[in-house]
Image (cartoon, rainbow, N blue to C red; front, side, top):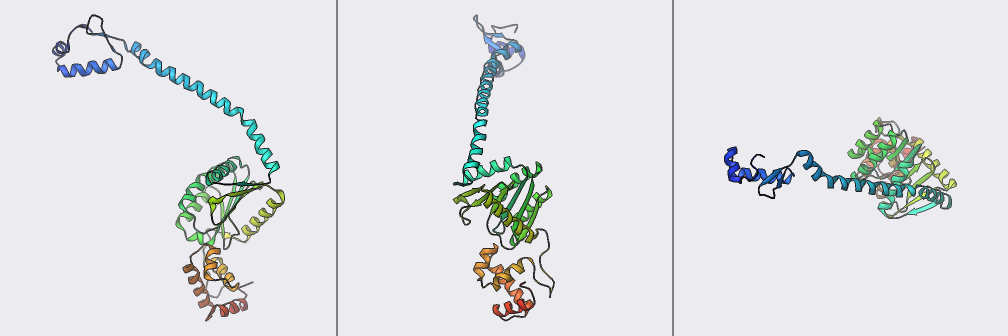
Length: 310
């Protein structure tokens, strides 16, 4: 500045500006540290390098201290890695069946099992169409597993083929390499990680009630056989449903027929197959029409005579 003691009005006149514009400019330059009050009055200009040093030094010091704190925290966490690994091994060795309660704890366990999964995930997914919340939670976990080369097999109920959100989810994971099939009746929701740990709900009707982690070799072998048998009996999820007139029923029609022949009510069949009572009534009516039966008893007799119950 060549006139450090000039007033705002004087500087305005020299620069062809208004006094208000000069005052705003002085405030901004002062805020940036480019102007400092002069002991003799007015302002003293400061170089940008000096202003930057003055303004940024405290921030750089704060960043430096935060980095030190982050490094110290990281060291403390890493120091616990050995204890964590030891605790996992002790848990697996001493507790072949572990109960986990609370939805947040269940999600944490699932996340941990997915993160440490090395080979395979086999899942039974009953209940027909899945909720949007369940799909949003499962999609990123499944895609991350598939991206790591983990073999993923999921078995849904036939009724899930009619649920748009579930169909889109299945298409997404199939495109990433998952294998998906469907079956009429599934015994329970179940996830088996690396054939070494199975997750079962404590109460199938309330998923938030808790889960059981199964590591017992005998029980785990039995659960793996259940999955393999159910998987072998299932059909590809994208396989077209429906049968031509005169042919034995398949897919959902066959499941409804078998349960009808077993004496189950529409309510019971709907619960077992994860579909509505209206859908059960519709399928049952179609079967009776195809068989030419006047009632359910006669439909069972004719289905047995045709070999449809074999």
